[in-house]
Length: 276
Image: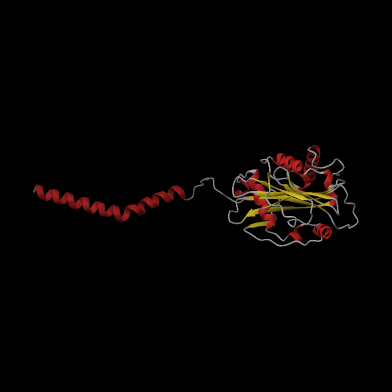
């Protein structure tokens, strides 16, 4: 009798285990569904625009922008490329890579400089460059009515969250007879804080009046970069002008960035530009 009772309990336990194995997962799933369905749940996630919020150092921004600018056809990217080409007798080439420089059709975000406030920021930047001695005081303010402004995104295609929004400001060339002396011609401006990454300015100065080492050092300080290092092996054919000097800025991420301080003698234009 006792053995029969033990066998019955073992059989009952086995049946219970089998029942739990068959219906248990379904019952648990149903219970969890009831706790999730028809309820509002809030969870932080990476949504649209999250890439913009990804924090980049100034060195990383400079590197991404340099790579992106090199990915485009330069002869189409600069409004006054023809004049510079004519002044030097050289032609632009084409480059390509895994970076893109595209028009930002979504417009500036809440964190970025709006077009209506852009030229106030540009003129503040010009004033700062004058105080640093990079530009002469004779350079005129940028009048909004005389310039074109387009918002771009420089993007690391393989890691799209690594992107930099910049305004490109160019003196309008619709009126061919505009006086371009002592004026900003082209500039790429950080859409976050208004820093001038790259610029071309007509001045009354000559190359003999300029100290490229001093300009590069003050420009790097203005951007908050490490001190520039000399670029090894300056080839006189690297630029469309014989008046230039190149520098290397150590990167914090993927690589270094090259900056060029130069001068187009025929049109009296000082430039600071970035490249890889």
